[in-house]
Image (cartoon, rainbow, N blue to C red; front, side, top):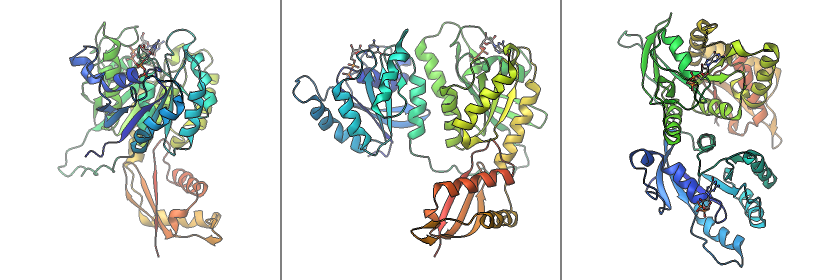
Length: 445
Ligand code: GDP
Ligand code: GDP
């Protein structure tokens, strides 16, 4: 019945699939009803990942007992689940290490033509992350170290899953300013626990409305806030940083993180708060990529700049990671600041406004096609199957995010590197750093 994206959890018995299933599925239930076993016996459940409904399928229990051909039976029991899956989550046990059936299963999965997310479970405690790295050998990319039992790494896993969910249909463009009233800019402030989101928010709102504290994970309870910057009204659509309360459980913390990720979809611009002492870590990159995938513009707030000793080195390291891991958002605005002292915070909203303006910008067909002509002259589109592709013209039917449509004979066959050439050229010519850009190619006869 449902067209929900399907996420299947696969792996040999006892690696912790059911525990992970409960973690991913039970988060909402966990708050209203903390009784163990609420979802334990269910093999399928509708769950929410980064604000999107999915169907979570557990293959645990399908392959109970009996030794002879473990891999054979794993495969048989997983085949059906994998068939329907949009994303496969393959779980191994970081404590027990890899087994021959893990390896055989991984080989089989690699040929399944489904996105596979490799999870090394039971990686809690000291040495857990290191043990998880052994799973690299499976050739399924970087393992995500988690502890289903303790909840570590679950947010990273959710982000990784979210990256692979099918794209949502494009949002309806909002009629702007029809009633003359100025629409508030919709902003989300995201980042890891303890990056300084709440402290930053206090600065932006100009008053100590919230309590901040040194303990990680105090942040919760998404609430919206309105204020005005120099340009106009701003609506903070959601953020875990909006309210803090002492002594909350891990589960609640995770829930609030998940809900702030879903807030990303409501926002136009996302401020990703980094702890400059830690740099841009995998989880930050995942948030930024997810924002890009969802078509949101991103500004980086490089917080705790006051505590950084070698600023040049910190900046260089950040630039390297940006270039290597976030080329989709090339040129993204980075604002070093100290939320604690307030220094540099005044640069943040102007950067947000500039980015928002780019994200909103429409470019006339004339200017667009003059640029397009130059690009084609500089480098002809390549041959495909011995025939040259003919690209004819470009349009920009929508902004928010900027969407470029190129028409031509067999245009849809255009190779990746030429697409990248066009995208980078477009970004440069029309000054759109830090903004996700959609490129569509349409064949004409
Ligand atoms: P499944 O057979 O793959 O569904 O695995 P289960 O979820 O039933 O877990 C198998 C065993 O591993 C159980 O005893 C769990 O308590 C344990 N387990 C699951 N996740 C973790 C974890 O993150 N850390 C540790 N130490 N044990 C775990
Ligand atoms: P959140 O979990 O992201 O909301 O982070 P908080 O705003 O609660 O900040 C976490 C910790 O980092 C607190 O102990 C803050 O005092 C500290 N912190 C926040 N901003 C800064 C800053 O600019 N410089 C320094 N040195 N510490 C900061």
